[in-house]
Length: 376
Image 1 (cartoon, rainbow, N blue to C red):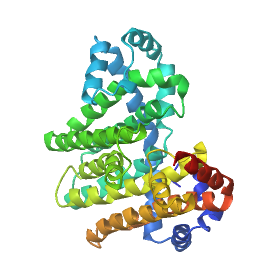
Image 2: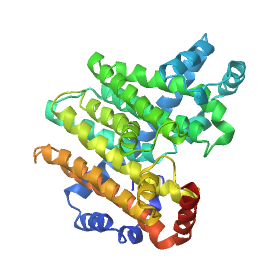
Image 3: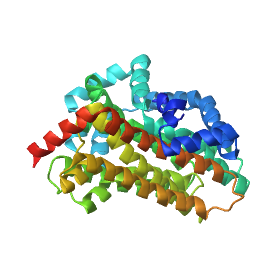
Image 4: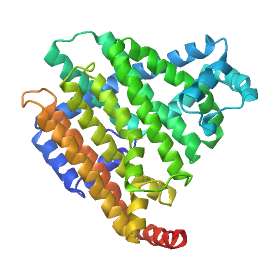
């Protein structure tokens, strides 16, 4: 429905989850929730190619106008805390830059990192959030709207190459290219968000620092230099809530109280999706991701089936907080029904992957249980 894995939202799969059945009911009734969701899905589909072209053109211009790509790269590494895994050897920078000078190669790399559920599921949400703000404030500057949406979507997309480099779980032939592109992706995002003014940009910078902290804690947990505890795992989830929560704030140009409501809704929805993504990754990769809620709960209970069940319950607790944000909105707030439907799709996404694991992949559960015995 708003995912690269569209089959998740076909009729048969919707019937298999409680959230999915509510989605189907809404669709059959063609109520306001369904109508608004379809509207923003269709609108974002129309606008998506324009966003992608602006993204590609912006990166191409930044690369070709950069007189010192080595300095650009090292400044980026300093800004993100000196993470060595993301650093490209200086001797390789000129070589990769020559490769990226071919617009076809550059476009291929950007298309690859845009192939993300996070991007696919987020793009229409930003349009809806901005529309909700624009209607209540009579805001009509579409150029600024595009810059704010583009900037935050590009910043979100930066997490894709960074994660692929650190995790080394896909696109292994392109990781050097991603290392080179990372600084330009961040620069383009910043340039666009700055156009909305200093207050909006300050919020972005603060959120980006928090997201980097979450990313660092995630890495330290992955390498066992930090203990896998409840508090540490919650802190690592800053990588989700800071990125999307900050974007939520800025979809209303950081205007309170709406910015706080948007922050809560988007931050908690992002954390909820993070839980579902961990279940999906376990199926796709044939192993429980470290760090993750499934691993944490499995270690505590010594039972992987319980670990995944508790992860689903954790996702529901995140989602209940997102629904609280919706409750703070006035009943006549134009996109309130949209957000209610959106959160149903988030719930279905998580329930779908949990059901896939426990009903269709019992072989994996047995493998995970054996892996857990070896680990402990």
